[in-house]
Amino acid sequence: MLNTDTLANIVRAIRAEAGHSLSTTQGTNLVDTLKYLAQRTQIELWTAYQWPTLKFRSDNPLAANQTTYTFLSGMSFEQVRVAWTSLPTDSTWRPMDYGIDETMNRLVASDPPQRWDALGDTQFGVWPKPGTSNYTVRFVGQRQLSTFLNDTDMSTLDATAITLFTAAELLARAKSEDAPTKLNKAQKYLLNLLGNSVSAKRRVSTLASSAPWPGNQQRLTPYLDYIPS
Image (cartoon, rainbow, N blue to C red):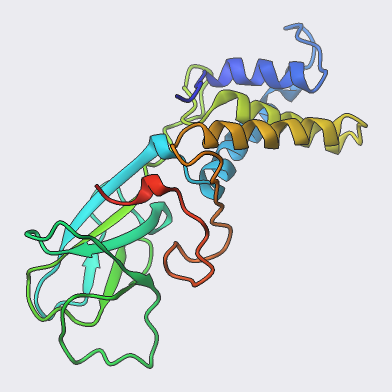
């Protein structure tokens, strides 16, 4: 379970980890900067890692001869981690590869769909063109971050992870000798945190700039927990 906290408490913790004074009369001019860094760090962690506790599924029925679809409410391209397809009467989900290029015949209709691609942030396409309306595409991803702007707003991700990574950046900016130690502590904490969130311990993957798995053949060792149930 993630240890979430308010933005105000996280900012105070960041100051402590970075060796700043906790006095309310000192360092007030840095508060807005620390808030921004905490917000940005949470976004970066959300983007870079798969968070099993935020797992979110979206089932999209396909229609015969239709290749373009709109993501359902609550899901966008950036949230998708894996894609699957199945018949409503079939208990087996089949992985869909990512990427549709110009060499693929878009006129011939055939089932089941084998690939998908982003058409902007709100739409996606499938290939080949569905021959029937029998199949469903299931996207498995993670829910969006909650608002994290005001002192009382709760973090979506783990407060300690946000604190340690932000403090490590501050120490690096200050060219502190403690910066590598703090960064190492942050990385170890994150690995343990995510590893303990799933049964397959410490199988942590990052998405970086690659297409969502299973789109590329490098197969970014995704969590077993991201297989549909």
